[in-house]
Length: 108
Image (cartoon, rainbow, N blue to C red; front, side, top):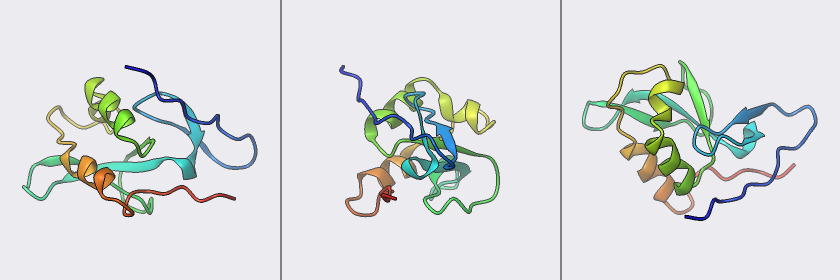
């Protein structure tokens, strides 16, 4: 599988975060923040936080299915969010698959 290339993080006053999927650094605005919460089925899940305002520990991810798949395969969400095993990524996958509702980085 070819590795998806992301543009390098810009240097400047913008905060830089690391994607838990591909482990590449990018500006905060280019990444989607995710938090641990409760999914629609009442079980622990990884939830998207596009506004970055949800309380609690967060992690960042490029808003692509490739980075989501890498993060799931590496079990990165449990580690980054300091949550137990068994976090469902279904709500996040659904968020990323919705056209127009996904996190769209804005240009400066």
